Length: 480
Image (cartoon, rainbow, N blue to C red; front, side, top):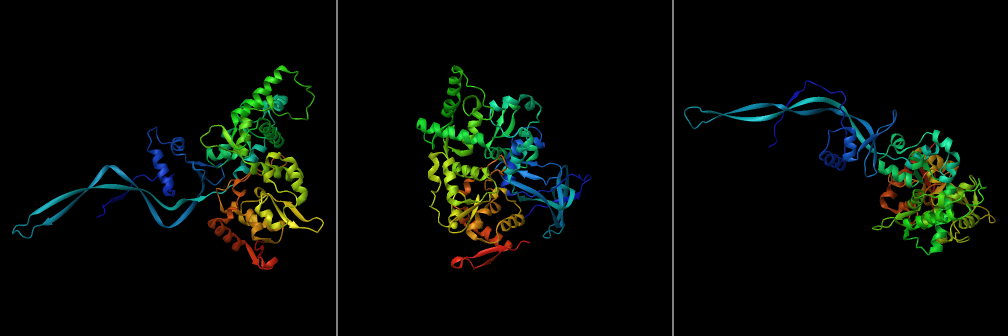
């Protein structure tokens, strides 16, 4: 039998009480965290114990950030029925007396059985609850925009910074606290996004976060690649500590014994020695590699990430230029360290535009067929520059070209249906998109769940007609 409850209206109705719907996983996380011994429950204590925190600037939609990298928009939801919020009254109980009569006796005997029931006070009535919706945001792009506001520009190394010490001291710093205030994400997710920009915390600059300059990244990468060849290092097991010793410590020792160079080259940026720090080298390793399990400071450099980064650099060098495919492949190979050429197609190896959507370029560009003389033409079209709103995304896609086939358009939709898909940084005049490992080896749209979600988007925002080659479906826009 269910226990009875005695309910009455309480004397106080707090106005700042809100009901928030949480999943079972979040409830368990909250309860486990708050069950830990500690100080009184404050916003800061809740964040420390549970990892859950609400973030947003004035005017922003509040976002709940969880330590598992998930973020949720908080939205008001009106209910058709009023909800009562009750609180147990600890200092009061209600006694209930049940009278029973013994009919087998000539004299009526009455016995009283007393039961004690807790009293619950109604402290609020609500017809609105707060619900959580999966939040999808180009986090790398948002952080990249914040870092791009640094008037000094990208970080080019300590030697370059030393030339402008006066301005550096007077420039506002973009600290981690700055990012916490401006970015609606957990601390762990912010750090992951910083690693994929890539950015570095400069201790000498007041622990400010700075975006690494593209040329600085490329020159450091080339230096690492040259050291791998010279020392016969395996890029699948590259030791960060040994690389620091080889590229920084040993070079600095040689510099102390030398003449220090001519010192006239203000326009050139030397990499290695004093202009390369362990923090920068680690940022490069994290950007291009993945940690080897069970081996601290050992990374496997991902050749596909290197190749994609260099492809983005080629596109970024001549913005707005459409490329003959073989000319692009030649240039791409020429700027990429030979160690990673196996990840780049050879000129003449791609004979059909459909092969582009299965290559490392699949969400960096689309291809069209030109004349017999020009062959396949590449059109730079990085996905991370596209809006996240579906209507705006399809509008941008069909503004670029009026007709798409499904294999061509899929790479540019995957991030809309996978909130956890890593987002590269948005490219700008001084930034190259970071590699998106989820779209490198195998199209994630082959996953049945992803395919189904893409089907929904295509049904809603496109029209399909089988008038392509060999009866292939061709998509046009429903968006006006």
